[in-house]
Image (cartoon, rainbow, N blue to C red; front, side):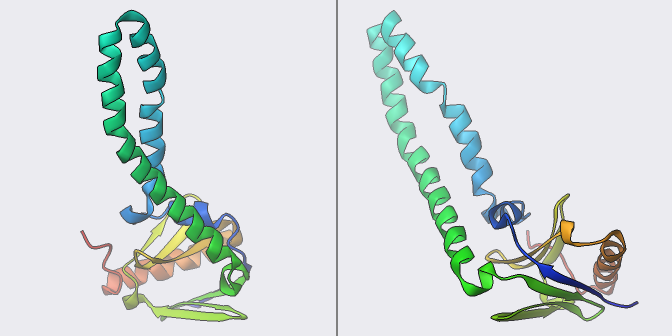
Length: 176
């Protein structure tokens, strides 16, 4: 089976691509969103409880103060994540378009300032979402190939190479 070449792949929306990663440590944003949605009703509840029973508002305020450090921790992790992504986009390799080469041996990307390659056995896993294919080496090294850059024929070839590598036992899946 022949390989596939995908030229001028630009990682627009880098944050969205990486946050859709199946690696749990990269899914902090989802947790933050859920916590903020759950915490949003607290202020009106405290206000209403103050109007109804001043003693009840003390309990609500104490609960809010206990919840505040957790919300602050989650917010700070999210802020660190956004800073990481912004700084990555400013680097030469983070701002350049890549050429991708996928064949029976593995995956390779080339850009003017960076060349990266891995045999299939070097990948922890390959996961596909509706918008991206993730080539996962470690929690902090996930190469994201946007599917919008692939024709239907190229996508079929990429899937065939991934399936062949899985059948050979080269791709073993994410550790539990």
